[in-house]
Image 1 (cartoon, helix red, strand yellow):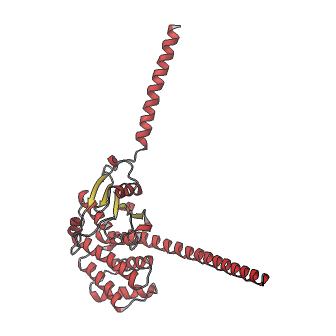
Image 2: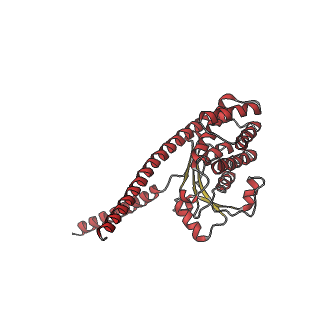
Image 3: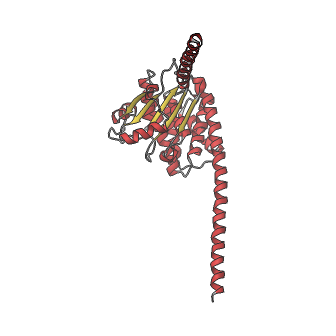
Length: 309
């Protein structure tokens, strides 16, 4: 009897140990794998966030365990450090989470709060980051309030800086100028964000292929792409583009190195444009439905009015 009892207790004990061990292993195994080459993902929060807003941003950026990320804050001082001529008193709400990968993995940008980033699209961020020299990375952008989205670039630049991979200062400034030109074209030229992104991407691809040596050759590339994409711009807006890409040429940005990323970006932009066209079709159907509904209601009241005359 004692032998049976001891055997039973031993069985229960070992079962408990293995069960707890398995449970602990499963829990540990559920954690995201740490990239030993590049380290933990880096999260950079905008300095202006309140404590409550910061908690919301953590949820938006899927920061569930702060021991699994490195956290920093982007300040006005960072803004003037990374981008010359900016205002150190600027309000910083945009935040970003950057997970660095091999450059062969490409660059993926996702705005996880699209309703709150009003001026910059995912492809516009991607274009600017390629100009700044960012290659393999997954970037998430978030804001708890409606903002233009420009300050997210500063957070991304800081993430690379603290991560030990300094980006070229001049390229960062040109990337910021590119983002400003892109948002300016959306505001002034009546283009949508994806049209502007497609234009910028195609110009870069042509620069990679043709390797222009003069400003005149840059101008020719810009003009050719405007014509190819059937985009009409004022002389002032054309000059903005020519000056931007002439600056890129003068600092020898080699877009041939990121040609694959540019090709991937083109595919993403074209896919987004197709989705937008489909949505517009749906929107037109909804609009037609409500027009027909309003007409039906008007006819009904007209009939009722005739009935009670």
